[in-house]
Length: 370
Image (cartoon, rainbow, N blue to C red; front, top):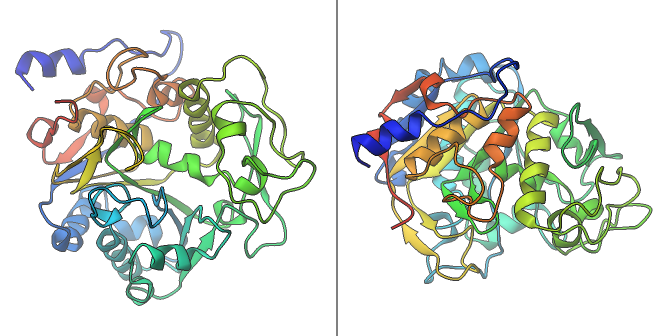
């Protein structure tokens, strides 16, 4: 990136109206990390740069949403999923250890496991050593949030100024927590342009309610299909336990609908810590099923205390303008989720207002579009 390109990027016109209060800003840390063996030390330094992990997690329940998109059979050129499209297990183990050392009372890992099945089985199916994660700290738990799971009822999350749904009905794990963490991969997304800490949380909506084979009146706890019909294209409404969308028929584009659902969720279930794995990843899409994807090694870790700020920095590291609008790379066929979240006060995309600690953005850039 040239100096001229960099200046143009940080001077992009803000989305927020002049008469609205500016969205909040929070620090973001970047570290160069060439190998996953380095993650414990790198993360420890990054958390210190963000003000200390103990202040955030001591004596608290921490829920960490992983990115485990795709099943065990989806591999890019035979590579382990953690080296391409899923967060790497070494990063998970290092985070567990550091949070335990910082005094976390309980650490619960959550993700949408398919089958339905317990989350540990899904982790083992992709080759992860679950025992190693469990032994890294006391009080480690796992929950498959695609279904009701271990609770008797679902939890409700209202959205004060919704784009798509006035309320989301989710697994109890997203309510039964003090600290919510989104652990994502530094990737493109075929529909939304990028999939980082915000888009990672699209997966918190359970398929038992929002899936293609969800129940009509009540959740289908044996649902095993995706969210295409409800969330991507709006061919049907969720099970009646959840309210219908506010403006049915407005758009059947995934780039419109998914971005707005993600922005809603960022308000309804706030993210306290975003961790983005950019040590090894893929470019061109979110998984091996997307035509033309390729393996990349950006060699970075990114973490921050606000998901919009963190994703804005991560998008800049990928060589894009985080304030770009629809029709501009990487948001060629989608609305920019970060701008939608910024407009409802989640966080700022303005790089001039974000305190970047550790490695400067310009020294960490790895262009995803080549």
